[in-house]
Length: 366
Ligand SMILES: N[C@@H](CCC(=O)N[C@@H](CS)C(=O)NCC(=O)O)C(=O)O
Image (cartoon, rainbow, N blue to C red; front, side, top):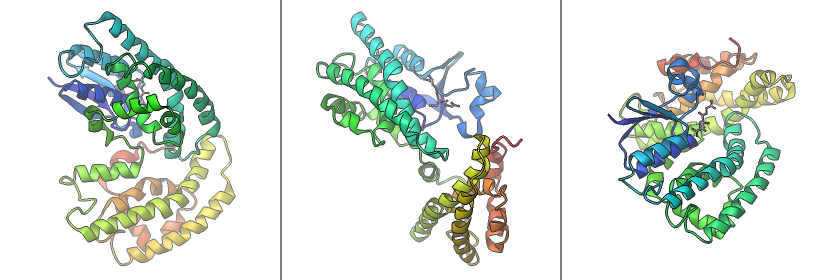
């Protein structure tokens, strides 16, 4: 029976396990866990990992959590295939692999993780990155990387002149880190840079990297393209003009709609959740901007049923989640007063796919 890995393709801890499975050429089934609906905090998943975190590996009657424990198990069980990631025939080398795997877990991860969080996860949650958290961790990371630079000037990889679990453990997080403005911390250290270029160019990582994105719109495009033969054709892949219009209106959502609706939602839902009063001047400014955007929508939707044409597409889908919250604010009349926009909203919010996620979308109101 194939191994089952439960997780999320964009999660660093999940991809740590996935890279190892690919290195060892293991056939496995990937089971996506919907973190956004809180599936990992509910009973079927909690019986696999009582801490409610991904990833989880199931191998027959064995259930494992903790990504580094998973990689160790996979590297041991499949020691005869792919590279020997644990140096099982050499006790000293094996011990050095453990040393540097611990270093990743106790020195590298605790400094890199908060930086990634501030640059990727905080904006995803509508928050500004906290510069003081970033600065503190940059200072700590510099010290860690100086040790790496010294080590990598004498051996090609961390535990010696062989690629091992120690190196592999760094790949997922470093991939995100290299997309932050702090990437120079690695690029300025010649040995660390060469090591990163080496470990990030391995085929096993290339197999997982395309799923590693924190941009929700990039995720929807990827999913819509990969599964274009099932469900509605959200990207109009057989019609270049329609496909271009889908992109236009998806960009409109991203650059005009979202930047005005997001702050309104933030003030009404997130601020009170954090014990703050909604900032009325932020709300008023964005209401004015949103009115202009919605006037354009009203004109467009008076001539076509959906934004990109007479077909439901990613452009419409991109609006659903935010509009759902927006319609619970005192500003909902901005949409309800525009007959075409109102009809469009009623249509796109009544699709079964949205009904499946909407019950998890509460800000603690229930
Ligand atoms: N030490 C754990 C950490 C697992 C972890 O934090 N996973 C994250 C995803 S990368 C998660 O499940 N987050 C969901 C949450 O915190 O609710 C491991 O290495 O597997």
